[in-house]
Amino acid sequence: MGPRGVVVVGAGQGGLDTAAALRGRGYTGRITLVGDEPVVPYQRPPLSKGFLTGAMTAGELELRPRSFFAAHDIELVSGNRAAKIDREGRTVLLESGTSLPYDRLVLATGARPRTLPVPGAAALSGVLTLRGLADAERLRERLTGPPRRLVVVGAGFIGLELAATARKLGHEVTVVEAQARALARALTPVMSARLVAEHLDAGVRVLLSREVTALWGDSSGRVEVVELDGGERVPADLVVVGVGVLPNTELAAAAGLQVGDGVIVDAHLRTDDPDIHALGDCARFPSPHAGRHVRLESVQNASGQAACVAAAICGEPVAYTAVPWFWSEQYALRLQIAGLTAGHDETVVVGDPDGGRFSVFCFREGRLTGVESVNRPADHGIARRLLATGSDLAPDEVRRPGFDLKTHVHTPRERLSHA
Image (cartoon, rainbow, N blue to C red; front, side):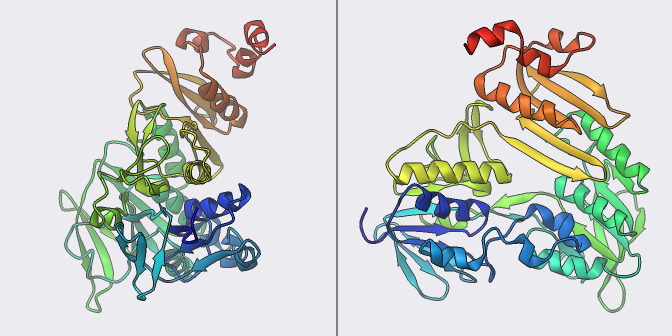
């Protein structure tokens, strides 16, 4: 590797972990980590939970203290967005005018919230999104104090986590979702229903199969009404839009790299330029678990792909085949998902959904593809191992009275296979 070194664009979880993994593998060249936010890399998951309640400070969100970067000879460039990639010259131009030469370039540019394309959404104050620390700080300021009427548009993970947090803080919360059920693309119907029931029990109003058609404000330009299809008007002091994200692919596209709902990469997370990798929320990669290219938004995916990219840069390429997993906390429910459940054709429920402790086993053509668990962490851990090694678990076996996943793992056949 020459003196140019590695430039990592994006200082989120994936970008930071790439830099750390390179040093951990003994890479001695120059590493530059570029972030457009004026802070050190931080955790995002607590932004919709502990940070909003005040249980965590901004300092406690930091993934590494600032001293880490000097100690590991990683140059952190904060508050400076990458503006252009010059592939021929192998440089990255920053908005400040600085030009960073590279031998290898890593794109960890993440994603940004989708906007709400209705009248009033862009013009009125009190209409927010929640993606970064600055968003969370603005939202926390508005949720501190007397009860407010909050409308959350979108019943995805961020929207529901935010609704749960705001409700615990004493605010009046309405969730509006255009789909017929919450988290329709991510969860099975029984799991969606359990989460919605938890919100209803907590006093959240959940409106499914309803679309926002306009936002209306008062004379000072502050939002006060959310209008729905059919003409219903929901009073609102604050509106948070959580209708999904768009991958930040503009930098890659302008450089002539292949994009399509993400930067397209191969199994080693290389773009069509072998000197440029992409990972995390912005990357669309071939998943052996999905049987197609997918783009995943999770801490696990970003960290796992960072390790894969670091290995490739250090000359030890390994295909990225990690089992995806996700989690969410809402009220007393801890939801954990192992694998990819989209496209399943059969489900088996084990446990007690009404009691808030159960798992949903998802199968496609008789093969286990994923397991959703609520307050059953052992099921989640075992499911991840089974999906990683290949599972012969059949739907009929899960349906048997008294089925326990721990028993399946410790069958004599399993013990013999590991002898």
